[in-house]
Every structure is written in structure tokens, then in C-alpha cells.
Length: 202
Image (cartoon, rainbow, N blue to C red; front, side, top):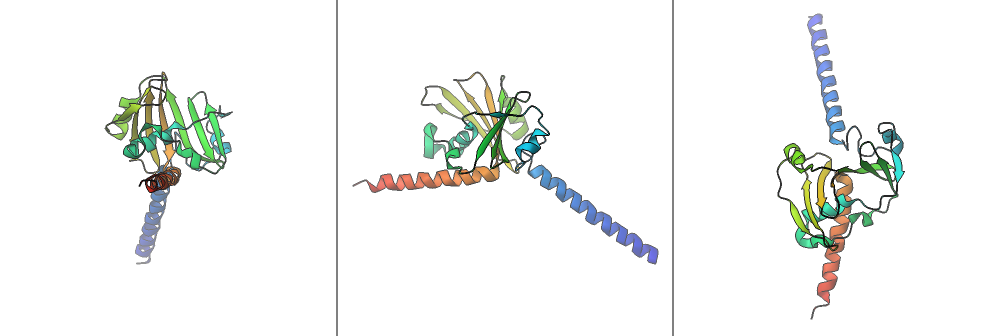
């Protein structure tokens, strides 16, 4: 009898441990950023995984603009301001030549990764994340832009961009928590601007 009780106890412990391991793995997967990095990691932590990471002065993170355009096309059209303007934290950027990837940190926490491709990557993304109808338009500079945004990843947006002005395509991986904060601020400004404009009508 005591052996049966011990066996039941061991089975219960094993089951509980299995549940803990599963939830730990799910949590880790849910925070996946790019390759073997996770959202919220510090630059020093990422440098241990991406050995050629070096400080960059890259001026833009176009994935945020692309996401605003794709998800709120009727509100903004193609001249939307970059939502990163609503970020009050300290932004630092690091480039990996080997990966052709730009890592974006806010207050030393990883929030976005921009990856450049010299050949078309769209079909590979469609196979991986699903088929979508792209949004396209003409930029103020005169070039055409095509955009796709996938939202079916647990903790990130996946944004694809192709413009005539550049001979490559970009894929942006954006932390959803960060994106939602900036999206909310941008939409609130849009609402206030619209109210102000309408208030001047007679």
C-alpha cells in the first residue's frame, strides 16, 4: 500500500514538473525576438549571442511606419509620421554585419530588429506566416512602397517592406508590447488632430 502511495506521489511530482517545464518553454517561445534573442534583453546579453554587434547611428526604424500604414491605411495614407517619435526612452542601435540586422534597444531593452535582404523574401514569409494582400502606395519622394504585416506571432509583429528607392527588402520584427504603446499614442494624436481640424469648420 505504501509503495502505491509513493508511486502516486512520484507520478504527481513528475506531472507537476512536466507542467512547469511546458509553461517555461511556452513563456520563452512567446518572448522570442529574432534568432536566439528575446524581448527585453540588454545589449550586453545580445552581444554574447551576436558576436559582431557594433553601435550604429542608423536614423530610422521603418517597420513602425509600415505597421501604421498597413493597419490604419485609411487614417494615415502614406505620409504618416514615425511612431517612434512617441518613444521617450533612450534609443540605442547595434548592427550585425554577419546577420545584416539592426537591433533596436529602448532603455537597454531589446524592442525591435530590422533585417535587410538583397533578394526577394516575400514568398518565403508568406509560406511561413500566411497569405496577405499587400498595401501599396506612392511615397512623397515619388517611389512606390509595398507593405505586409503579420500579427499572428505571440509577442511580435512581422513586417515586410519593399520600396523602389532601395535595391533590397526589409523585414522588421517588432515587440508587440512596444508596438501597442506607440500605436496607442499615435492614434490618440491622430484623434486630437482630427478634432482640432473639425473644430475650425463653420
